[in-house]
Amino acid sequence: MGLSVADALMPRTLATRCLDPLVYAAVRVAICVVQALPRDACERGARRLSRLLANRLRIRRTVVRDNLRTAFPAMTLEERRRTAEQMWEHLLLMVVEIAHANRVIHKTTWRKHLRIHGMEEMLRCLWLDRPKVILSGHYGNFELAAYLFGLFGLRIFSVARELDNPQLDRFVTEFRESRGQRILPKKGSAPDVAQVLDENGAIGLLGDQAAGPKGCWVEFFGRPASVHKAIGVFALSASAPVLVCSATRRGGLFDYDLRLEGVADPAAGGPESESLTALSQWYTTLLEQAIRREPAQYWWVHRRWRGSPRKAKKAKSRPAA
Image (tube, rainbow, N blue to C red):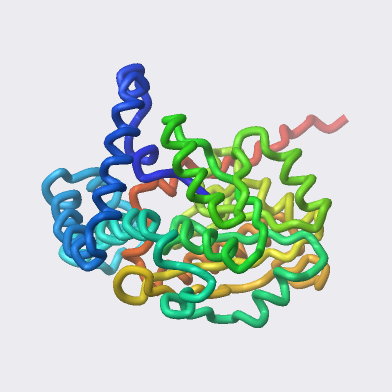
């Protein structure tokens, strides 16, 4: 689900499209190197490289620090710098975990790496003979969480934007689908999503992507941010329970808490299901609360706050007859 680190950072030009095969080859070689190295060596390398990315190469440094200043105004400059380093370390460790996942996590080993909070309610909702919407954000290791759901025998159809590099897109999709998850392209997927929900299936979505001025506006860390209306429309029109989940790293590699942050069931009534805006604000608030627990595990490289809500046009007064 969501964007790759490369696509989030690299604008597309004719030159980059021509370089796609070379970029793909470089990524595959890097993955092979990561897979060949001991995991403790990968951890040490990620820590060193994160300092380089944050402080020397300064990739999106201004965006990251502006976002942290917006979300956590009480943070000092040094705290923002350290959080930025930890974010890059987290992103690099995500890559290592994706490269090693097939070898490390199996049906007999997942308990060594994963602690599930709210497991009983999560499984009860997921096994309902009703449509379901599983929601997360660019937080923790959402890729590993989706992989684990497939490992547990839960067939989830996740909506994800296709990567701009077609060869990388096929490679990432193969990983995502290696344990039963199915990927639906973000563009033009509405009919497929509707069919999955009609068949009482489960849809996986990321709920923190900027939707532009036409999106549904909610409060995120005290500022207006837009989210895609389709998320709420899918859930409310299908009367599908919405499960907000997170997968946050406790320590090193493959050491995670998988947590059910909350459930909203339109069939049960509740204030969070009264409208599209109420549901959108509900899950955004849960994601914010999760991010506040581990700020360094959020993708602050995204420009999350873009634009502002459109102001309603005032009706023109008519002269009295």
